[in-house]
Image (cartoon, rainbow, N blue to C red):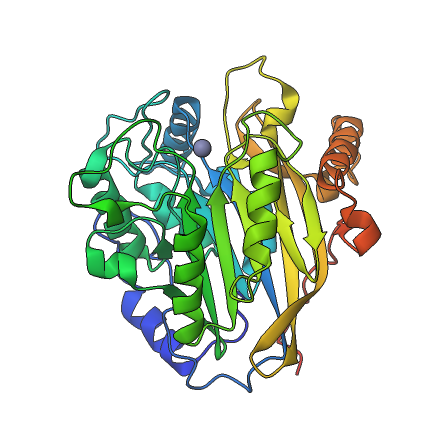
Length: 399
Ligand SMILES: [Zn+2]
C-alpha cells in the first residue's frame, strides 16, 4: 500500500514495531503494515484508487538457494527474498492496495524446503512480501494442502505475524466464514480466493473450510457476504487455467463471464499457468486470466516465457456512492533473470537502459504485451507500461 498517507495510528505502530525482530530470529527490519491501521487521521475518502496485483509467489528449490546466499552475503541467517524482488517494489509500493498470491505453504523455520511435487517455502517469504508493499494475499492453490493442516496453519500464522491480510484457506470454520476485507483509506475492498484443485489431496474429514475449491455458487455467496459487510469492491483471485498455455482455456472463459455477470464481483485476478495469459474486458469489468509467476526459478533451459509475468494496475473510480468502475488498466511486464543471480527485472526500465541485455528485454517486453492482448484488451484501453517511471520527487509530498 502506498506509504505517503501515513496515519497517526500507523506512525504509532511503526514506533512500537521498530525495535522488534519478529519471531523467526532473523535480524531483519520489522515490516510495518498500514492496512491494519485505522485511517483515523487520513484525508477524505478517495474517489479513485489503484489496485496492483502480482503473480504467484512460487518458490522452487533453486530460488530458496538464492535467498539463502543473498542472506549470507548480507551477513544474515535465514533467507532473503528482498533482493530477488527489489526491481518491482516501487510498483507494488505505489499502489493503494497491492494483492499477492502465496502458491505454496510456508515451511518450518529450519526447513527442509522441498520442490516438485510437494512445495514449501521459507517463512521469510512472508516478511519480504509484506516489506515489498503487499497488503493481502490469496492462499488457495493446488499446493495449499501440500503440508496438510499444519502447513495451512503455519502459513496463516506467519502472514498474520507480518500483517498481511489473507484469504483462501483457514484455521477454523469461523475464519473461513469471515470475508477478507481491507480498509483502503475508508473504502472497503474484499479479496476472495479459490482454486481448481488440491492435486488430489483431500481436505481433512469434517474440515471442508480449510481451503476453498472453485464452486461458482460458493464464490458468489462469499462475494455477496462481502458486499453485505460493506465491501465496495470485491476481487476474486482464482487459481485456474491450463499450465504453460498462454491462451485462456474454456473453463476460464466460462467461469470468468459467469462471475463477472454478478454485481457482487468487480475484478478477477488469475494465477497458476506459469505463463502470462490475456487480460480481457467483459462488459464494464476486467479479468486477468493469468499473471504468470512473479517468483519463479525453473531449471536452466526451460522455455524462456515461463519466466515472464505481469503486474497490472487497475484504477478504480467511484461512479456512484458505493459503486466503482475500472477507469484505467496499465500493465507492467516483468521477467525473472536466472543468471548470474535470480533477479526480477522490470522490463520497462531495463529495456530503456543501454545494458547488454537491453535488446532481449525489449523483445520479451513485446512478447508479453502480445500475450496480454490476445483477447483485444488494447482496443479497450489497456496500456502496457512503455516508459520508465519518472524518479519520485526527493522532497516532501505534494498537496
Ligand atoms: Zn498452481
